[in-house]
Amino acid sequence: MELERAKPVSKVKKALKVAGFIIGAFVILFIGFGWGSSGAKVSLNERKLDSIALEKHINKQKNESEKLQGELEALGKDVSSKQEEKDKVIALIDSRDQVEDELKDTKDQLEDTKGTLETELKNGRAKIDQQLKDTRTKADEKISAIKDEIDDANGKLKDLQSQVKSKKGELASLTGQVQKAKGAPKVLQAGKYTVGKDLPAGRYVATPVGSGSNFVVWDYGGDLEVNTILGSNGTPSYTFEADDEYTIQTEATVRLTPIQ
Image: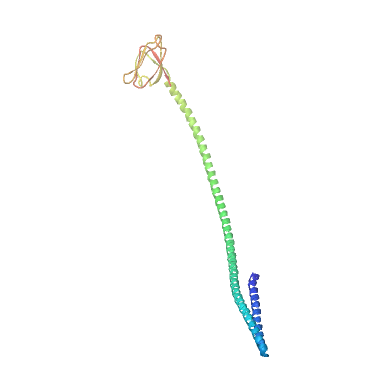
């Protein structure tokens, strides 16, 4: 950084040194001009020659002086321009230093923020892990309690199933007895019978007892449901269904066997 600042300063010193040489030459020329004038007074004949030569020399030196003056002014402008460039470079350097300081501060802030975020993230993860652990423990406890309830319910269900099975056995026994009682064949002598009074409603198979005869059934409205001949002169059996208030008429003994 210091080397970059030194370069414009060395150019300025060089420019000032050149300007000093030019000014010194200008002074020497004027001194020479004074010596020439004193020499011209020595001789009248030589005075014209010296005066003409001196005038030419003065004009030449004047032109050179003006040229040098122009170069000096240009050099001054260049020095001023270089000084401006130097000021700009110094300003840029200062600005760069400021930017570097701000960048360093920003990096420090980022590091602090990163550390804070990492700490918060670590604490948050630990908190979440603990919450998950607590939740898992509570869930396991609930599952265990539910399993115990299920086991108790299964035990009660087995007891109930055993009781139901026992009751079903009893019911089957009673049903069998009822069905057996209901299933006993009914022997009807010749005559008319009312279903629901003389015999229960249901499905029956009618078979003749003996040679057989006519067999007729009417519904509760008086419509004819069955009209057949049982026995050797007709059909050996006849299946029908009779509801309550049906009327059955047979001309000979007949056996009615209940069926499902």
